[in-house]
Amino acid sequence: MNISFNWLKNYVDTTLTAEEISKVLTDIGLEVEGFEKIETIRGGLAGVVVGEVLTCEEHPDSDHLWVCRLDAGKKHGHDVQIVTGAQNVNQGDLVPAALHNSWLPGGIHITKGKLRGVKSNGMLCGLEELGLTLNDFPNAILDGIWILNDEDCKIGDDINKVI
Image (cartoon, rainbow, N blue to C red; front, side, top):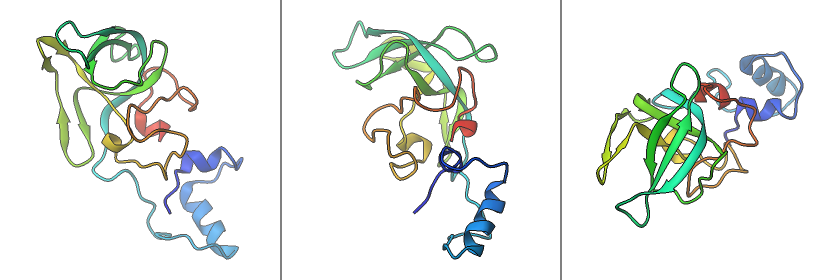
């Protein structure tokens, strides 16, 4: 089973690194697979940040798409428009946003474009798009955008820090 180092820190107050914790767990008799190598998200993540949904309105030319405006932080823009088909996003939610020119696991390059004639400057992400599963974040949902409201993060944070 894989666990997130940040998730583990919710239950263990420590200043140890992931490698040091792996060694301690192994020394007390718990098996830690991959002890020699702590894994990171396969394929890497670049340009994916925490955004706050400012507005979420129906797409003018679709019955299942939404046009969301996000605050992605000072560095990335306080008014980023992204079109999504996700039905679980609401105003005020903190969400992972793959902004224009970002990279997702597997070498997927996200760029700006148009969906049914409306500009979209990226993509809102669920666990699967980020290379994660419910084993990594059991309180998330698998089908939809990963809502980060209960995670220790703020607007503009790099998603790698959150993970």
